[in-house]
Length: 318
Image: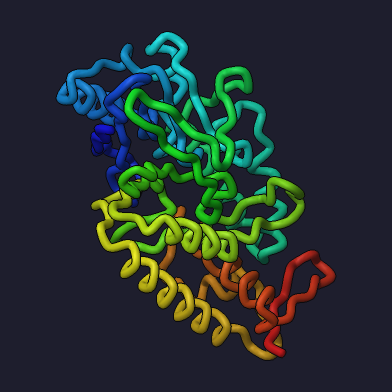
């Protein structure tokens, strides 16, 4: 099975995104890049170098529905004459009829984010949305855990790897233990456990960090030989990266717990201490990181949490 990485530029701080072409029938693109002129031009050039055109694509598979990964899905689907688009049912970023921001807003208020910061985040969210076209429900199908994407010479197994987002998926070629992991595995940084509504109960915050640890352990059971990530270089030593991730997560959790005073603190207050220089989108990512670590610490009995009269969650040390 020939997997061709194509580096596609993005307007985001993370830099270029890796799109993967599976160069055999049915010709498949895993992720797409954002909806920008620079991205579609880079993607066309990458396809051309591999001796393909957009019209040859029969299937578009999304690791998750952030704009840098799904932004061109609708345009490519239409240009490729109704190529099939697949995404996990717990993702929402690609949908036309989403209520995601209102649900996120309620969770951010509970995390202690002040009203003026919420308005900044809302404007930022509206700006980011321009980099993806929404897909109607009839324009995509659902990825199922443990299902197989069949190709001429083999298959990729779908592995639901929630954490970075609730519906993040990875794809395993069991014949040689190669994995395409999206933003579940990144060589140089630990992926952000993005604050998201729980797909089962959107009034709750998704336990992103606890789920992410399970996902990392699940990928480890395949003893990967090569992992293609959503950004940066591929990973050839998953065991080393797995242990490095675990150390980084435990160190960050210790730091988060140490920032919770006896009087208590919200996720927002902890995030401002943890990342005092964060601005723009980084403030949302910072409160996501703080909330995820506080949730994990609470689930492990290391912190208590109570709901204040104004609806904010306040964490306290025992």
